[in-house]
Image 1 (cartoon, helix red, strand yellow):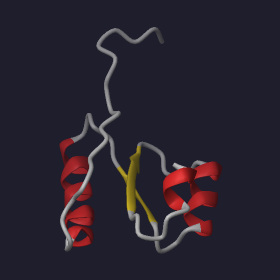
Image 2 (cartoon, rainbow, N blue to C red):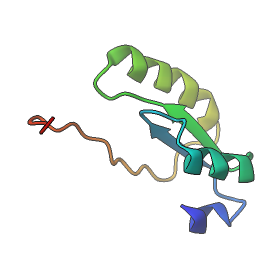
Image 3 (cartoon, rainbow, N blue to C red):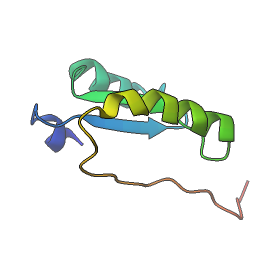
Length: 78
C-alpha cells in the first residue's frame, strides 16, 4: 500500500474488521488526504450497509480499481 500512497493522485479506501490497528492508523495519519479507513464486518449486514454509506460519497470521481481480499472461513479452527 505504501507504494500507492506515495503517488498523491491515488486515493485509497481500505476496509477492516477492527480499524484500531496501530499500523493502519499510522498510515492514515501519515496520508490523511490519500487514505480512508472504513470499518467493515463482512458477516454483518448492518456493517456492510454502514460501509456502503461511508464509501459512496468518497467516489465522486468514480472507481478505478477494486481489490477485494475479504473472506470468511466456513470451518474456523477456534
